[in-house]
Image (cartoon, rainbow, N blue to C red; front, side, top):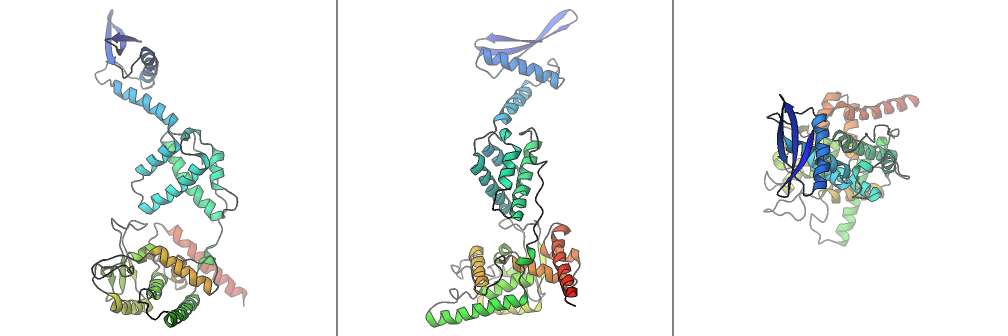
Length: 383
């Protein structure tokens, strides 16, 4: 069907076809540097012509397409784990930076286990199991690992980088119900505030020269915003005064280029009376401009606008959780869990709670209904 010609040290593939007793030929320049490479490429091109049912004598015949198909097939056989993960992250255009960083953390764990240069096609199902189900890791953490790796290996399979979906037969372990241990009640929050007030009194005695920022005057307003508004810590620190409409009793969690929400949408949060009173007092103390952050860093000035540090806030909160002896599972995000649970206890409909929390679907929100059901069971058991 085809042969190789060498003209002036350039190699051509020549397709021959007999038409009406006459042999017609078409020559195409090959991207090779030796006769051996040319012969090898010829056999592969012949296979591709047959595979795609293409006529080399057609006006639409494209040799470059076939060569690229062969090169890409070879490349996928040797695509390294690191190259595959980088390509995956590049193609996740819809994912925000937080989600991409989450995937990168999981990829770094994979690099630690199998390295970065192993061809992705050589990863085995057992490798994935070893990644997800290490000893000493909590069940919910294992489920999170598998959830991330499933997305990656599904993608790799669809791209043709691996011959089979490595996570197809791997089932997640049964989910632990640890949410109840992360809930913080109103009384527990007041206990934390009481401990904080005692801390402030002692600090004032020892260090009377400290300014308001050093005295953590933001502590109660920030915690109340999360507790009564159901905001994530990242959403709290990204609030600006233009997003807080005290007259309308609403605040806006804004999706922007610099800070994307998990749902990718803006959402309006109703401000309850207790939070409203807190924010009025806070505005009187700190307001500079509508474009300034509601909770600013101590490094902020009237002319510089720097938001508070989310990590520092979480650490300070955890410090007082431990001081008052609450469950070790309680973290700052527990304030949001409590908001959701309280919403159901007050008979707010599921779609409305889902919208205020900014969840993409009802399934995520329904887990809080389960906690309310448990409260009802326990109440009747005590009769």
